[in-house]
Length: 551
Image 1 (cartoon, rainbow, N blue to C red):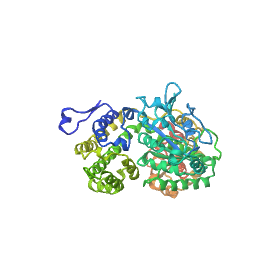
Image 2: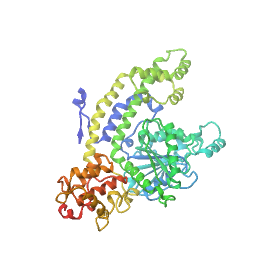
Image 3: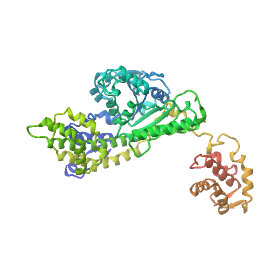
Image 4: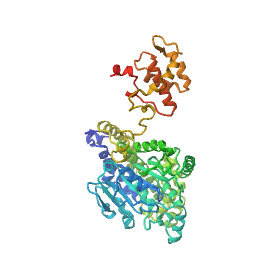
């Protein structure tokens, strides 16, 4: 059990005791942030109140993409098994939000039943009504992958010509985003709701037909403030030649740069995430390396879940503070009796100026403010007479939480990380390449010759011996200075050559015999071919004469 004390007198008398990070986050939210949110109607503008399940649920991965980019197939690839409700095809097949979660018995839970289950983190989705709930299900199945994470599959967003045709067929009155197969509910708002609560957002694109529709652009923009969770998968990359793949990759990066306003470049993984043979296998090694990087990122989610929830609570608290300043400013400007309607319209129209004033007075970053147009639309439906004036006590409580409580909770996060076993996603595709000859890089680079009976370096040793005997060996060994003159010809940096020397000088005498010199040159070749050097020398690279001594 961990406990920590605050600095004020009340805490000294009644210290808060947190069993876990989740317990601490829940208590901080309910006692310090929730009162501010309720007082200024935060939930009517931004996000519903958090519930216990939001703090206790497993990490979630949200998949978003245009139709036929391989979202459902991607889940099937990860799990290595079908899941209830799964449909795969070239045309739009997934017209529902599907929460793929672990369950002892395989089955489907409809949306209306899902939102009344207190153990599931979806209760607040009830606010989107039956139009959404009829297109929301939970697919449960026993899967080792789902013991650590849950995956949210989303409807495919129409693109290009299909988007135009859909617009012509539908009645006017809805935005294109709401019309395209998602009638009756705000698709972007649902995605925003999920984005706030998931640990990773994966945007999937089809390398074979890269066409970012206006709808998809709007969806990505709706995920603003969650760029740190975003990853991009350029899927079906085996369907095009290398030169075309480079063009598609460049076009994708250019398009994303216009849509996602972040100084950092979003990580893009290139590959083909299905279990069929590669159509064009030229980039097989690239796909394998990219897949392993993506898998490592997903596998890290359980380990970083507590930190993510802590970060999301901080972001929510900052937004709640800004919201309080906005609402209290509007309340202050409203007249007591006459001209309220006209003043309301004037204030909404001039909301940008109010933003600027709050930014100056309270030294708040522009990035902490909600979207101006969205806020203006929401304010038009509000009764300003019911807004509350500034209540400093509530704001001071949140400031105290951010300045002191969060720092103490961060210590608890680190303590949990060191005391709990390392949590990673296991099973499914995550197991397929971890062991055996199909592990990434097996038999390549420093791993070359791992299964050979003979020492792999012996193949080129005669060539290395010729160089060795030109370096004036004494008692069968060359000095470090003489070896250096030869090794620097590789043009590798001294830091790399220093690591190679450390690996090759097995007896640590500061000199190299003929086998150690051959090993050093072999490692130089490995590095020059683009492979990474091992931190420790693998057993199969030990020179034969050194193996008994090493054992």
